[in-house]
Amino acid sequence: MENKGKQGNYEFKAVLLLALGFGLVGFDRFMIIPLFPALQSALHLNYQELGYITGILSITWGIASAVTGRIADRIGPHRVVAGALFIFSILVSFHGLAVGLGSLLLIRALMGFFEGAYSPAAVVATLEASDKSRHGRNVGLQQACLPLFGLAIAPIVVTQLLPILGWRGIFPIVTVPGIILAVLIWRTLRDPDAKVLAEQTVTRDVAPHRWREMFAYRNVWINAVTMLCWVNCMVVVSAMIPNYLVDYLHIATGQMGFILSAIGFGASLGIFGLLSLSDRIGRKPVMIIGVLGAGLSLTLLKQVGPQPALLFIFLFFTHFFNCGLGVLTLGPLTTEAVPARLMATASGLVIGVGEVFGGGVAPVIAGFVAQHFGIQHILDLALVGLAVGAVLVLGLQETASVVLSRRRPKIEINRPDEI
Image (cartoon, rainbow, N blue to C red):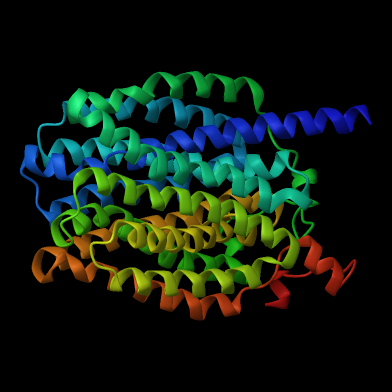
């Protein structure tokens, strides 16, 4: 009983610290978005260049996730998480020194690399600290803090501070909290036990594996492609919607900040709600519900004129469903499908592909479309991605322990020879 109490206490502290850390990742990553109109004016940037600024961080984020996931499997995730958090918290303050597109791209590239290193390691650390019956809930809570801090709180804070501090003075406000949190994570988190992690997967495999063996598991390569679809929707809509609202719908800046907060609130509630639901009814049914809900919400968003309340509602539900899809994909649907010693590696690959192509290339394409054909057409790019993802999710294999125990008790599934 005493050991159970200690484990419960560790689970609470670990998930809380990892969640707050990912919240700072989100704040650092997305606080620049509501500043785009101000940056565009001060540094003479066009829509295409705003796409570059968004895309470069996603590309380095994706590369780092793919590379450092394997490192986290080898040396332990807590070292990667604490070190990455410390470094990117310092880097974010450098935004205020930017003098043009080149310096902004360099800062965003460096920051994206260390933020990307945090993500897969934090997912595995969260799973290790959690009972398998709470995988979805705890990963959902941890991942929900990124949109809550970055896409809900940041737009409100940044748009209110902008007239007081100016855009250069806003960036350093997150440096000190990030350093403090990095120290707490270093002192609190433990390295995962491979045997414990193995019991939380459908493979029950504790043996070492080469990195390329993860491709033998169907969910890994399907999730790598679908992650591209979900990140494409999230990043394109999030990055270009401020200018869509201001330039196309002629929404005032104050109202724009309110509408943008719908992205974060919707994403946070969707991640926590959909992942918690997946613990009960299964991962795959929730994925199907999510992609249909995201597509319908985004279609309705396209039809709305300058009506702040309706824009808030449809933007809320677009990200409610889409971000839930993303976290289910990079989290339980990937990590539960592979051996314990490949969990961070597989999650890192899925995140990497999604970020490099969905988050890196798609905003550049969206910037080109906005610049040459009109910003009102950017939502079509996100809809195309959701349509592709809707087809691919039908091929996923279920990984939720509660569903598998009802279907095939005591039978291990999803091994390479069954694919």
